[in-house]
Image (cartoon, rainbow, N blue to C red; front, side, top):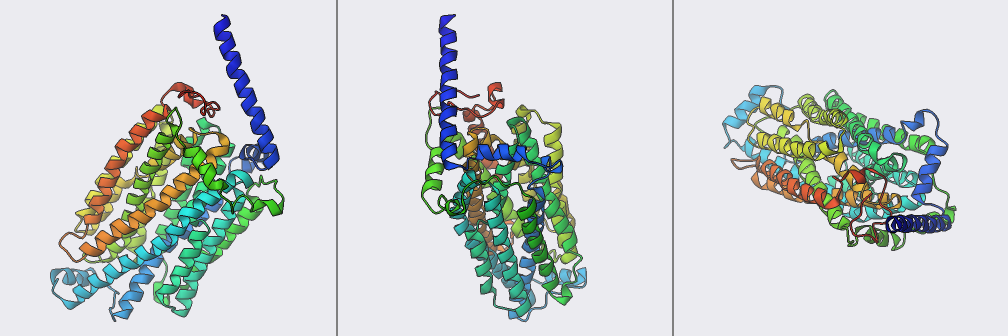
Length: 508
C-alpha cells in the first residue's frame, strides 16, 4: 500500500504547489480570469445567473445579419446605377424573359453587375478580417487579464463605427470606397468575431465543463434568434424610400446593446486604470498564445490545432456560401426581391434552434462527435442542392438540409475549452476567433473569386460545390483531433488538467 499512497501524496502535493503558485501569480497580476469567475458568482442578481452577455450578442448579431443583407443589396443597386441598369422587377415574367434570352444586352449587364458586387463584397470582407487576425489575439488574451467586459465593449464600439459609416454613405450617397473606413476600423477593434469569442469565454468562466456545451449552444441559439428576426423582418422595409431607415434602426440598436453591456454585464477587472492597457500593447498576448499552443507530451497542441483548422474550414464554407447566397438569389434565374430574400435568409437561421434542441436531447458527450459528423454531411448536401438549383423552390428546399449546420460550432468551442486550464480559456477562444477571421478571409477569396469567375458561365453554382468539399474535409480533421484529445475518456469530464505540462498525457 505504501507505493500507491505515496504516489497519490505526490500528485496531491504537486496539485497543491501548482495551485499555490497560481494564487501568488494571480495575486500579483490582480486580474486573473479564475478570480473573475468567482466575482461573477459572488455578486450576481437573481436573473444574471442565467442572462449575462446574451442580450448584447443577440442584438449585435441582429445588426450584423441586417447589415449583411442590406449592404449587398445597396452595393448591388449602387453598381447597377453606375451602368444605368434598372433592377426593379415587378413580375416573375420579366425575370423569365431575361433568362430565355442570354444574348440580350440586359442579361450581360446584369451578370457584370453581379460579378462586381461579389468583388466588392470580397474586398470589404478582407479589409475587416485581416486586421481582426491580430486584434482578436490581443483582445482575447487580454480578456484573461482584465475580464471579458472591456474587450466586449471595444468590439461593440467598433460595430457602432461600422454601422455609422454605412449610414453616412447611404445618406450622402458617398462613393463605395468610404465603406472601407468602417470595415478597417471594425477589424482593428476586433470585429464581431472577438465579441463572440469573449462572450463564449465569459460563459466558460461561469460554467462547469458539464454545463458548458449546452450553455454555449444556448448562446449559439441566441445568435440564431438575432439573425432569424433580422432575416425575416428585412423583407418588410420599404426600400423605395432608400436605405436610411434600416441603418438608423441598426445604429440605434448597436448603441442600446453597447449601453446594456456597460450597465449590466458583470465586470471582474481589479486592475488600476493605468495598468489596464499595459498587457494589451505588449508581447504578452502572443507569448500566452504560444504557451497555450506549444508542443506538449499529451499532444494537446495537435488536438487544438486540428480543432482550430476544422473550425476555420467550417467558417470558410458557411460564411462563403451564405454571403454568396444573397447575391446568387438576386441574380438571374431567381431574381429574388427583398421579401423573398428575407424569407430565404430566415429559413437558414432556423438551424440555430434545431441545433440547440438536438444538443439538449443528445446531451451525452459521446453523442457530440456523431452529431457533428451528421451536421457536416447535411450541410454538404445543402450546398450541392443550391449549386444545381434552377428554380425558386429548389433554393428553399436546400434549406431543409441546412437545419443541422450550427451543431459543430458549440461542440468544437466546448471541447477546446476542456483541454486547457481556466486562465487559458480566453486564449483558446482567441485562437478560434482568429481561425474564424482566417476562415472568413479565405472563404471570401475562394468562394467570391470563384463566383465572380463563373457567374456568366453555364455553372454559376460552382462555388457551392467547393463549400461542400470543405465541409467533408473538416470531418476527418475533427475526428483526428478528437481522438488525440483524449476527451472520449470518462476522466476528462472533470475540470481542467492541472498537471498537463508535466505528465505524459494524463487527463482529468
